[in-house]
Length: 167
Image (cartoon, rainbow, N blue to C red; front, side, top):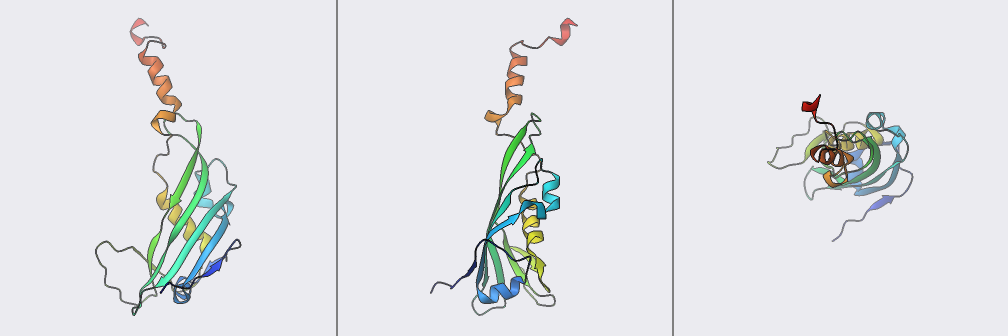
């Protein structure tokens, strides 16, 4: 039997109680403004735009195990660290979190998702921002075939740049 989802489209709440959402089998779908995520915009050249959010909250059958999973997407303007040109980074995160209240005992299983203790309502934008920061590459770069640094390096090899030995 398929779970019944209660969906929220468009306007997403500022705070959420993930365990309560999992009890109800809720799904949140919509967008959050990128400007509400200062740590993520700090590394971006532009702080405008929206983050696409699609999160499902579930309770495992017969257990006190709650799960949050879904997809988060955002397009960021960043600096390529190879050529130092502006580039668009299409960032996608697929969080899979086990939810619990403090004091609850969960036996960790190998390969389990990360654990999130949710005793009180959490900032949805903070939760989404955390997951996107974890998905952010350490060194953003164009694909090698799209980077202008490759073109410059090829010109140096072909002799387009002055040879240091001639100085």
